[in-house]
Length: 119
Image (cartoon, rainbow, N blue to C red; front, side, top):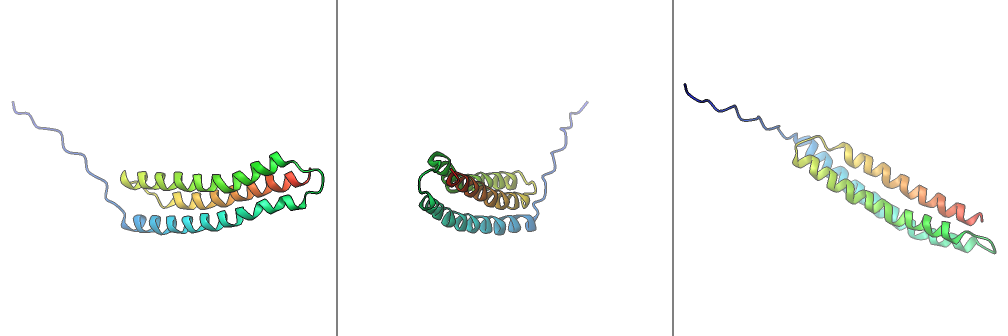
């Protein structure tokens, strides 16, 4: 009786369009993050509207959310997209989600900063 080894698993084919689309969308996500970070710096001027009663803690939290969290989401998205590409899974959707998340986190931070100016 002869031993026949099991067949080797078939490797997934890499979709070239997915690779290029993911790279292009990640570059767009980086540009969106740069623009959002630029606008987030100007949220600090919301404190100029305060005369007597402003919640500086809420304003600081909103400012930090708008500055830090979009970049954190971008870095996590880049890592996630790279991992999906390495394991030959579709990854084009990751930068789309990251772009939406970056913009949403900026507006969350802006809303928190605005709510802090209401006192």
